[in-house]
Image 1 (spheres, rainbow, N blue to C red):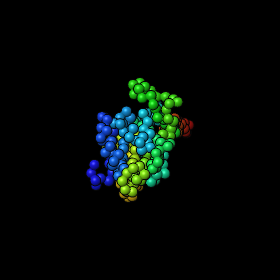
Image 2: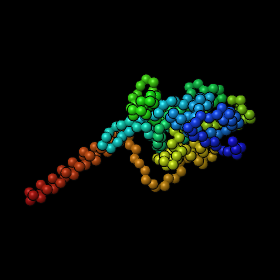
Image 3: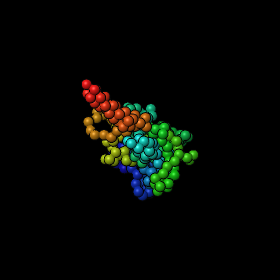
Image 4: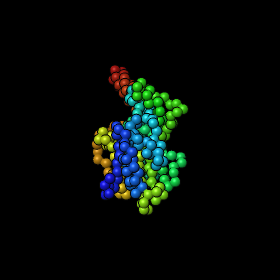
Length: 262
């Protein structure tokens, strides 16, 4: 690993890591490393066990959330919209929504080892849950909230920090880590969706110690998709399909009746 690297970014891979690679990663963290990890369901490359060492519980699950589709009402989807963030400095400026796609839970451990500070960064909505029956979900496209599942809000981003000396490292430097339950945020397809880029840049800025990056930069005007809540979707449906057409029809009948009666 380069000595002048400010942040090390790791994304999910198809093959497991070698033990020697994990040893190098542990040594990097114990010497004040800064690490951003992006995971995917069913593809942790052995990183789930490594995250547990640092107080992050990576669930073998997929986040399922309710979505509103025009003319179809409520349906279940795998693209949860995040509108709630923690009080951590990495997300202190985040007020806008972000879009995760095919994400898994990354929950702070209730009892991390001494020397670790583990805090949640981002939560899904109350209508979501972490589905653990992945075979049924992917094979039959069916999902149902059960006792083994984690009911929302579910943590999909977590931060870890501490002093290297407290965990057997050298010197008095501080290590930092951000774990994302979705690697799609880093791809071209999703990086510019909603405020995904602001979330990733803010987390990276915190890791790199660049305070100017821990903020939402000015946004250019560009095409975007509307992500509605269940209530907003119903309101749009009633107004556009039921109320406005009937109102225009009644106004037309009133004008016609008035003209024919003169």
